[in-house]
Image (cartoon, rainbow, N blue to C red; front, side, top):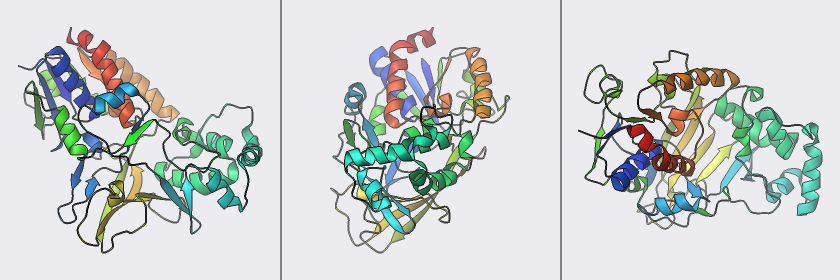
Length: 382
């Protein structure tokens, strides 16, 4: 008999399970309805090309949290990959996030850092002194209306299909603005990709005789020993799925975004010259193209063949995999009801991006799970 049931084999669930087994000596069962561990960060190697493909969209590991970095390195080594993103607007390629190169290229200038900072401050003065209330105001306050409309408004419209005035400002605050020519996408101390691939990393986290991983198991099935009906109230549960699904949408559906990935294998060694190319203009239906072989230039690939994903964004239906919480005011009102219901669940902890209805990067997910394992798990065990 297990001491703990973890629902969902993503990073949050794996981290809690690993800590429970190795630190507390517990016997843990992890279930997942998919046929693999790792959740949306899972990757596999394409049989025809040997290229590692991120099956649920690009995942880049980066962190300035030394505890998280040390923890991740227990299970994998990382390459020295540095993520750089470019954006196509009006038929021209620009470096992202907005930096001194982007600004000078877009406006046809040769401004110094101080000149550019003054210039953008003038562009952004529309909301000067006011706290941004939504994504539109936040974007303009960061880069001014011309740059925002060129690089963010159309892209965000495709990505969220929600009026910008209804989206929280936090969505766009994740993108830095730099007054240097540094076009690294992330500014964290540590960055890289798992040298052996994401799947190996996640499998090593669960490689413990006290951890039993059962795949293809539906927590919400009508019967079975590891279902919600059988487990809740009988065994401590860490639930990492969508919180609205747990309560059978009794307070309403939370809005999620999902993506469709269209895969192509192309007869060239290099399709776009970089791993991720964004498309900012609304007449292009997809948001970006991911070319996976650029994630691992240290690897050798046979033949002049590459593999790409064109990424399309849309609202998630109940049968889809939820990726991003839309998080409008209406969603927050519904979420508040679910959080009240969650308080009454006997020995059930809700964690991770889906369980919290919060956008969390991989390093944030690990940090949250480590914190719970350290301070909340004993309480959950009763």
